[in-house]
Amino acid sequence: MAGRRPVYRKRRHNRLGMMLVTLCVLMMTVVVGISSIDLKAKQKKYATQEQALDQQIEEELARTEELQEYEKYTRTDAFVEETAKDKLGLVYDGEIIFRSEH
Figure 1 (cartoon, one colour):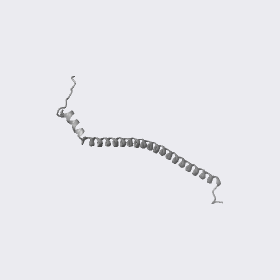
Figure 2 (cartoon, one colour):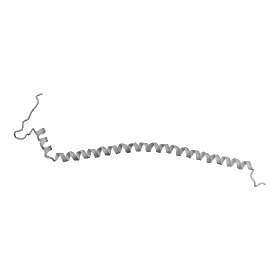
Figure 3 (cartoon, helix red, strand yellow):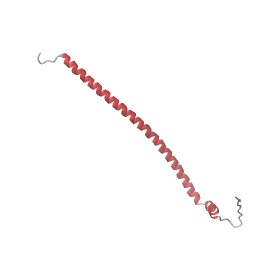
Figure 4 (cartoon, helix red, strand yellow):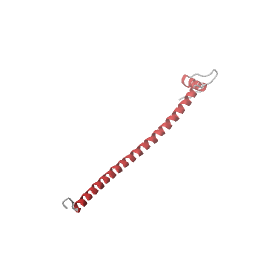
């Protein structure tokens, strides 16, 4: 009987081991939970940024389309005529200009 350990020591080691394992599992659960919360917050932030960028892209596409339409308009005779009248004060022969007095 000299080689056998008493039963109560074995139980104490088992309890201590189970407590350590339980503590480790709880700590890992807390760390994973905190990381999960942090990742969800980042995901929400990135989704908001993505929506803002999508809106900016749409606005820039609309602006590009407007600029392309304006470029087409600047190549027309109507634009040249309008610019000549407004900026240079040119008129056709026989055309009468009415100006208001202020």
